[in-house]
Length: 335
Ligand code: SF4
Image (tube, rainbow, N blue to C red; front, top):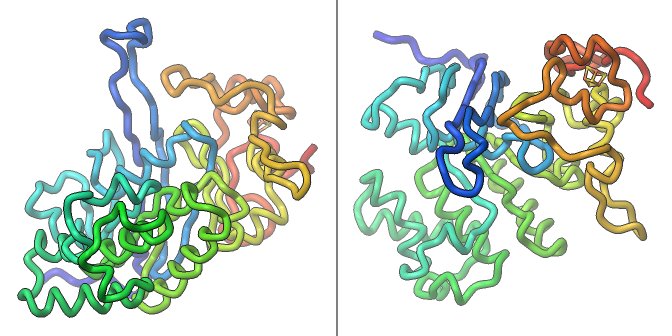
């Protein structure tokens, strides 16, 4: 008999995860042949009931990482252990139980909902796919989930286009929870919504986390959202985690120059939106040709010769347990 996971086993353990895509071969970017290193050796653990946020600029690899963990992409290399069980290398059939327990919520609820199905059928769809319960049980569960996300019984016969963006995201959340997942991977779940609606959806996600014992992997480019929602934060740059820490420690004492730039680029009342590009030179380089040494060195205000020659490892930084940074000068005061 195989022993089950011990209570100390993290819900999710990712080790050295790599996802590369072949590039080029024709079209507009025919010259860009080679390998896109979208995720390039990522390791992290996620405890039960925790919320880990993945942050970084567009193109840093956070969405590819999320989709690889969610088994939507087959990893190029590395390990994904879920509830103590290795998932990489499993066939479709063996993956099915894990697919049920790992659900995703996407940025655009409209395109992720079938426009031809009424909402009740959309929420019930995963139950049907996984063959869970009879019709009456499925109907009861759909009604319970609809209530929990703030939808009424009459809404079950309406279609996605009859709802606002915030309500559509509530529908998508109810559908994700239908099959009792342990891990919900939320990819920019509120970034398409008005600011006033964002906090309602985030509060709902927090309430549902408590009610259903959920663990969240939360992808966002918005540090203001992450600061209030996540227990821990991992900052990604060009396919790698460059800093990881409990949320409070990351914002109080960022050790990586890229994290400091992201924090400095947060919008300030009266000054409007800013981007990391407003406080850093240049754009994020192509993952087809990552710079040698520390991949951040072309944009880094602290870059020295060693940075161009050797890639820093992700190691303990700051004073807080679980705080790690990948920078040769992580123990020095920032600019
Ligand atoms: Fe900047 Fe060097 Fe640290 Fe990279 S290793 S973040 S280039 S100081």
